[in-house]
Structures are given as structure tokens and as C-alpha cells.
Length: 113
Length: 114
Image 1 (tube, rainbow over the protein chains, first blue to last red):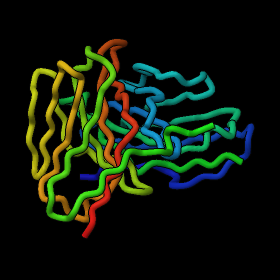
Image 2: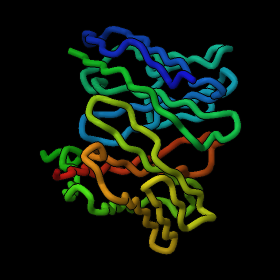
Image 3: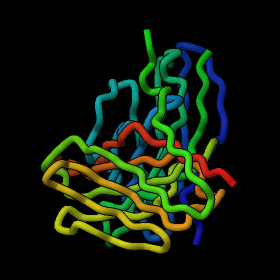
């Protein structure tokens, strides 16, 4: 069984650019959540996708958007990048039988210069 | 100004001893709690979870205790090993809004002394 995978591993972007991060959920999982983790802090909830629709959003501006595809994989898009967007972006998937449980991928390290 | 987030509480434990990591959670309505282990450069790894209708749950070498009266959660690791060295986060699910979104604590760094 394959766990949650994310791509790319690392990314460097310039302020004002746009970025797309990708996540493949674990087999049997239909819900995907995205989190932002700044250095030295706990992850912060960005949003969650279920049945290809946004199902809850944290305190992040609209320039953070996402998609979920029929195979339950997901994308996180961030427009107009700011320096403070530099962080580890984590994707977590939840199984059909228990949506409380969230299993994380390795993350994408985004650096904005 | 000071960046509080960078000053993680640290727990140093001798190899073979038991570790206890504590967490104060924020919301009395929280119905689900989970402990994660995060090693440097990796994503959080699920350790153990507990629902609010329980006060204790045991796994392999780990026990989670929940005290709803004082909104306190603890993770006990038996016979701590060097591989247990990591940052440990507790997280809670606050019901509402129809989604399952975890709110994380600040984390505790566990250092195991060989």
C-alpha cells in the first residue's frame, strides 16, 4: 500500500509568481487536507477537499486555492506569492471509514525569494 | 520581536526510561485528539489517537491519556529509544463547519540520550 505522496520535494519561487503543489492520497482515502507549516511551528489548516469540493477552510486568503480530482489526488495553488508563504506544505489524506484520521505526506518545501 | 514559535519546549530523556509529553488543548468541544511524531525534514507521522468519549488508549509502547476536566492530553512512551527523538505534536478536531480540520499545538522536542 502506497502512502501519501507529494511533488515536488523542494521548490524555489520569486515573489509575485504562482505555484502548484501536488498530492496523491493513500489508497482507500477520499478526503484530502492541506496544511502550511512555518519553521518551528505546528501545521496550520488551509483547506480540505471531499468529493472534489472544498469542505472547510482555515484562515488563508483566496489566493490559496485547490482542486481535487476523481482519483482523489489534489492540487494546492498559490497566486501572487509573498515572502511569508515560504514554508513546508503538507498534504494529508483520510480514509473512507474514518475521516477523523489524517495521514500526512512528506511535504513540499517552498522558498519564496 | 521574539518569535515564540521557535522556542520549542524540550524534553531530554535517558534511553530506556519512560517519556511523558504533555499538551494543553484549546477547546472543550473538541471530540478527537491525535499525536504525531515529526522528524527533521519529514511530514508528521501518526502515532495514536483518542476520541473524547475515552480517557485512555494504548498502542505499541505508547499510551495517550485524556483529561477533559482540565483540557489536558499526554503521550507516554515506554522504554524510550534513540529513534524516538523527534518533535511531537498534539492536535485536536473542533467540530463544526462540516469538515475535519486539525488544530495543532506548538510541539515538544524529545531528545533521547544514549
